[in-house]
Image 1 (spheres, rainbow, N blue to C red):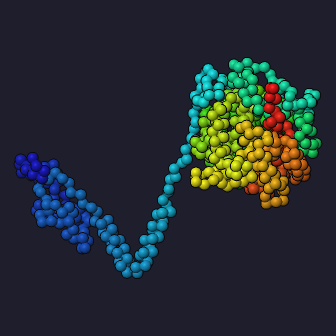
Image 2: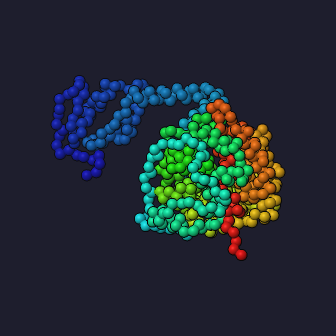
Image 3: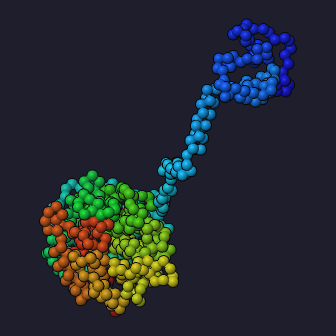
Length: 567
C-alpha cells in the first residue's frame, strides 16, 4: 500500500460533535476535520491574523504545509504557532526597516564592532611545551649507562635526620699539614657493592683532578689559605656570607629562592638554581651533610633535592624558566658530585650517577649544551657542564672520554683570535662565534685548562692577561660583572705565580670591603650595577662573591695537583 492511499473498508463511524458546526471522524486511525465543515478546531480557537491568512494553503490541501491533502493520510500535519510566526516576522521587518533607514557608515561600524566582540571572546589555545624526558632503566644489578664509564648502583637508602647543628666557624681539632697537595686523602674504606660505583674502590680515573676537592678537608684549609694569599678578612667575609645565606633558607622545604624573602631579589624565580648556588657556597667552605658548622643547612636542602630527582636523573623543583633548565641541572649536578666526593656517602652514589648520565645524554650535536637536551650548545651553559663533569671525576666517577673530546671540538668552533678569546655561540659556519665577552672567554680558557692545555701555553697566558687588563673589580662601575670575575678568578688561580698574585691583590681587598657590614643584609653583596644582578638578584651576586673568596681552598691548583712525572 502506498503512502497517502488508504481506503477504508466501510463507511466512517459517526462520533459526537465536539463543538457546534464542527465534528471529527476517525478515519484510518487519524482524526480529521469533517469535510462538510472544512474548519479546523484549532483555527477556530486561534484565528490567523489577516496578514497570515491563506499562509501555506494549497488547492484542496491542508493549511500550514503546502502539500495536497489526501483523505485518509496517516501523517499528522504540524501547525506552527501562528503567534510565534507573527512575532518573528514583525521583528525581522523591524530590523530590516532600521537597516534601510540607517546610513552606510553606521551599518559598517556595527558589523565591525560585532566582529571585534567575537574576537575578544575567541579563546586561542596555545600548544603546551613538552618537557623532553631522558629515561634510564635500572634493575637490581649494577648496570652501565648507554655510554661507557658510568655505573649505576642499588637504590638509595633512607637518610637520617641530623640531631643538632654546630655553631663554630671553620674550626677543627685536626692538625694542619705542611703540603696539602702531597698529603693523602683520608677516606673511609667502602666496598664496591656498598658504594655502587666501581671507580670509588679504584685509583682516581683522572689524576689531574682527583685531588682537587682535598683542600676543603679539615687540617688543610688554613695552610692553603695562607699559601694562596687568603687572610682572616677573607675568611670572616665567607663566614658572614654563609650566615646570611643560612637565614634565607626556607624552613618549610629547605630550598632557596632567587626572588626573596630578602630585598633586591631577581626578576625570575628558579628555586633549583638558587638552592644549587647556595649549596656550592656552603660546600666550598667544607660543609657536608654530617660535618661542618652548617651541616644541618646542607642536609635540609639535599633532602628536598634528592626527593625531587626524576628517574632520568633530572631535578624537578617547582617551575624553572625554559632558558634556565639545563643551567640549573648542571649546577645541581656539580653540587651533588662535590658532596659525594667530599663525604663518600654511599647513599649519594646512585643519585650522582643518574645526574651525570643525564648530562652526558643531553650533550648537543656540536659538543656543547644550551637550553634543551640534544640541541646545539653555547659557551655559557657548556662551561657549567664541564665543571659538573669534572666534579664527577673529582669524586672518582668515570665520565666517557668521548664527551670531553666533543667539548674540545665545541671550543674549537667558538674560539677567536687563535684561542685567546671565545664567543658565546656560532650560528653559521660563515661567521665567527659571537658575542665575545669576558665571561665566556674566561669559561673557554678554564675548559682548556681542564682539557689539558699546559700551564705555560701562550694562548692561556695571553688570554688571561687580556682578561685581567680589561676587567677590574669595581663595584661602582657599570662594567661590574661578578659572573665574569668568578671565572677569571679560577683561571688565574690555576695559573698561579704572578698572574694569580696580581689578580688576588684586588680580590682579597675589594670583596670584603664591599660586603654589607650591618643591618638585615649583613654578609651579602649589593646586586646594583651588576650585569646580571637584575636577573639573579642579591642571592646570585652573594653566592658568586663567596665562591671567589673560597678559591684559596675550594679547588687545589690544577697543575700543582698533578702527580710528578717519572724520570
